[in-house]
Image (tube, rainbow, N blue to C red):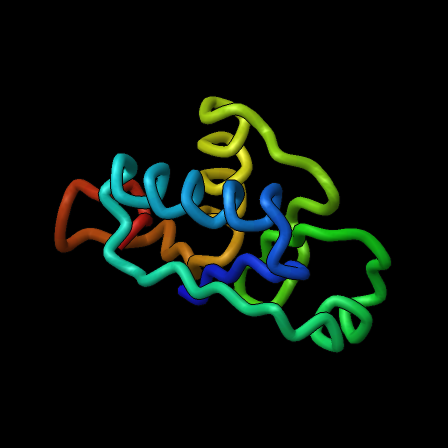
Length: 98
């Protein structure tokens, strides 16, 4: 999964990047969180505020620095959306999450 924080390099953008890395680690996600100051990426997404948290290229958080719990909710909510779930999985007890 691609997780990226995009911003201008301001204090709020860097804080979102650091918080996102912490939350991803606490959630046990092994994917790397990327940071970009390429504001053309923000414009290409159709957003005009920063920072932007994008998962799989889709903006999921724009212009705010949430608290840790809210960020966990945003990431886990988009984590399940980005995975293909096989509800007929019979090889394990994953509930279709493998």
